[in-house]
Length: 417
Ligand code: UD1
Image 1 (cartoon, rainbow, N blue to C red):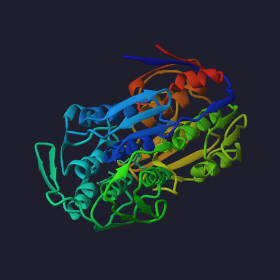
Image 2 (cartoon, protein in one colour; image 1 turned 180 degrees about the vertical axis):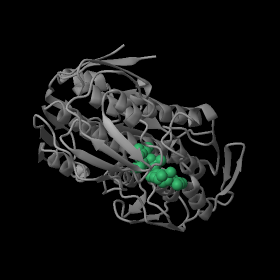
Image 3 (cartoon, rainbow, N blue to C red; image 1 turned 90 degrees about the horizontal axis):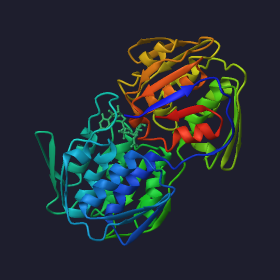
Image 4 (tube, rainbow, N blue to C red; image 1 turned 30 degrees about the vertical axis):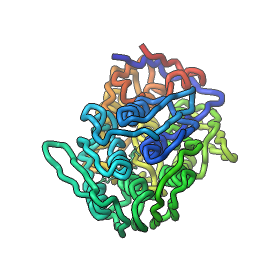
């Protein structure tokens, strides 16, 4: 089992390239199942979650190859409709394969998805939407047996909450359904727009992605295409958190600053200078960051739940008190006990966490239990006095490509053992 060894207090300096977005790559890989021909998916990050999606594609009969950051997927000869439990359990976003397999094969058999333990993660919206589109779904012993005897058809779907995964699942399934599908209260995340862009490049007719209503006119077939994955806004927020706690100046290359419009003002409030150019952010942190106004996680364009943990780690060494309200997931504070081990002063009550900044954290042995929690422990260790040992690195590797190498190139004392 690998661990990260970090000796804190090094300043970071220099440029770093922000990887492609995991949360775009995963649904796009699932959507590629609907295409014939060879897809070239550029800027595809090297992550265990991405590898898990590729394993599912291969199992279903796709030819999948990686050349550096480019993934080549050929789904012309897909011949299976069942996904084994051990593959489904590897990621949460494997659920997007439900719509994709059903649309492609007219049947799908899969178990409930895995992913990080950040609370009860139901899939009721996915199931209800696909049923409205004509799917017959039977659930038994943790398995979903889905069929669409007459093919999927368009439907008017009003989501009770703008679920990212459900919006993606419906978009994919609706792309080749018979007729028009309308999703109201759709998720508006940049990754939704990226998926729509990919689908449209394959011949789909998806309109309104990024807005609350998405309309999909079903087409007969999709043809493989070339697509470049957008940069990962959460990795960018994590790198900014790393710089914020180490009084550092770094440049993020390959970012889209507008995707961080709810995150950048929080760092500015903390006293950081954030200079945005087209695909670049220059980030300059003060010697000590200030506390921030209440951070409430919300669906996009609100503050992302995925950036809550890393900002919390940063606020634990801010001058003053920062309040967090986690509105998206019910159990997304598992990093707090580990931050407290490192000397952070954090109290929680339900979905509220109150962080009283301390002068310094100290190195400790900590254990990550989810992806963003693992990133928060890296942020905390970089500014802690002395040595830290972080176990549970496999969680970090779900979403961060060669993270310790990137940080060490910027001057951090961090290595994987
Ligand atoms: C995606 C992201 C994840 C991010 C989250 C919220 C991917 C691969 N993962 O996860 O990193 O933290 O969006 O921005 O893109 N819900 C239901 N029923 C459903 C579906 C969701 O109740 O059928 C609830 C969830 O339990 C959660 C909320 O809706 O409380 C939001 O979940 P959702 O937006 O679906 O998140 P994911 O797609 O799982």
